[in-house]
Structure formats: structure tokens, C-alpha cells
Image (tube, rainbow, N blue to C red; front, side, top):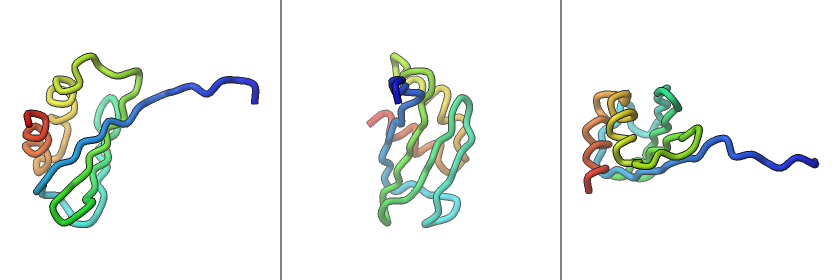
Length: 87
């Protein structure tokens, strides 16, 4: 393989506590624009959120997540995502 690997995207991870999910113990895939978001429980009180960031990382990650990603999340997750961004 002569060509160099290219980075096409990055995952940004968040850890939310006491976050209600649509179905307990099941992963949720949110087909947000411009990229998908994976949400899953890792313990009885903690939920991991992985946001696929394509086309490079924004200068202000917090603003990008609050302004562009949070509004596309299911209602049960919006407040938890915004709350974790301001801790």
C-alpha cells in the first residue's frame, strides 16, 4: 500500500450522567446533519455520546454541539446534552 491513510472524520465523546434514554440498555443512532451521533449507556447512571465530526473540527466545539447537534437530538436527550456542555 503506497498511499498514505487519510483522516476523514473524528469522534467527539461526551459523558452524561442520569440521562433518560428512549429504551434502556439499547444504543440509539441519531442521523443528524452533518454527521451521525451514537448514544449508549455504559452504566446504570452514565451514558456515552459519540459525535462523528466530518470535515475537520470546529473552532468552538461547545457552540457547535449546542447550536447544531443538540437541536437534532431526541427530546429526552436535548436537555442532558446542553447541561453537560455547560458544566
